[in-house]
Length: 152
Image 1: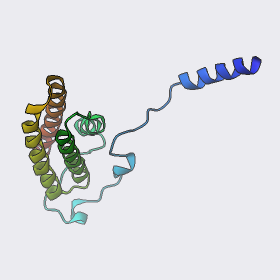
Image 2 (image 1 turned 180 degrees about the horizontal axis):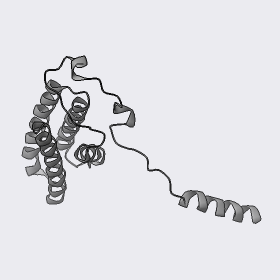
Image 3 (image 1 turned 90 degrees about the horizontal axis):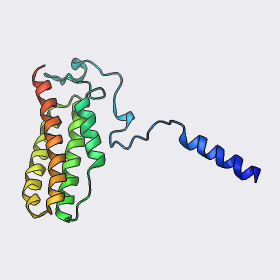
């Protein structure tokens, strides 16, 4: 009985202690480069001067990618996968200072976004509202990042 009591207390203590949350983000911590070379090292005429690791909007995009819900409609889910892939490429391109890759990713995102807007008409009202919330947040965060890049 003492053993059971001891292990019960031990279990409660270890499970209730604060611990670091797992990172389910599709962009792992190894994704971020700590030391970036100069623009002349990369041979770029223009540069993307944004620290993606510390950017709140990029973090929110990453979180939205990882928490995107599944829907009952297969075609919507397939297009959501394409949209998420475009967003990941967008964040990778910004971090790699790849302007052409960023532009390709934005075009791919816009294409998927338009397809999803058409497919939303067939969704139930609740699913449509959830999807719309995600899409608005994604588009808002991308717009803010793009505005900050244009300001440089």
